[in-house]
Amino acid sequence: MRLNDKVRKISGVFMMMLVVGMVLVTPAIACPCSQDGPCSKDADSADESGAKVKATKLSGVDLNEATAKALSDEDVLKLREELIKSGYKPSIENISAEKFTMENESGTISSTLVGMPFSGKDENETAVISFTYNDLGSTAAAV
Image 1: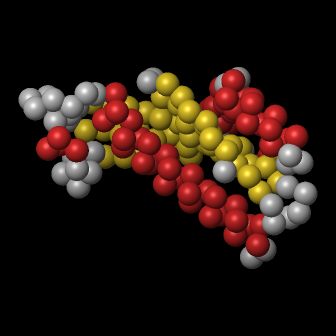
Image 2: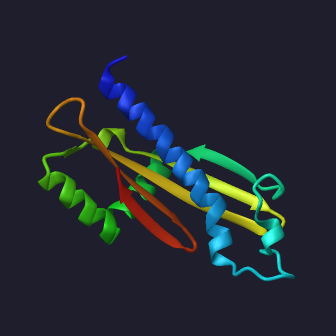
């Protein structure tokens, strides 16, 4: 396995961990803590939450729609422009997306993660723009 493939695999694992963490944390951020509500401090433990998370790799039309949403995001466009100015080239054929659905007693929330890889001047240089969105909003970051 080439070093570039290893870096890409590690980046993919990192992105998945980031998204799963965001999926589990986002509902807690959206709900203020109170003593008697579903978001009380006692319900803050992942082990006791009873949350079920399902991941689905997107393809075809779903992948195209998620990619189009990412590419229309202002933050993604800024990050993309910065990477290109720094000498990185987008690897459009390697864009991937996954949909995560978390369900617990409070309800269900779905989040979509789009990973847009970039290759650098050297084959060992890579970067990834990670774009995550759900009904509560969106966020983008480059690694």
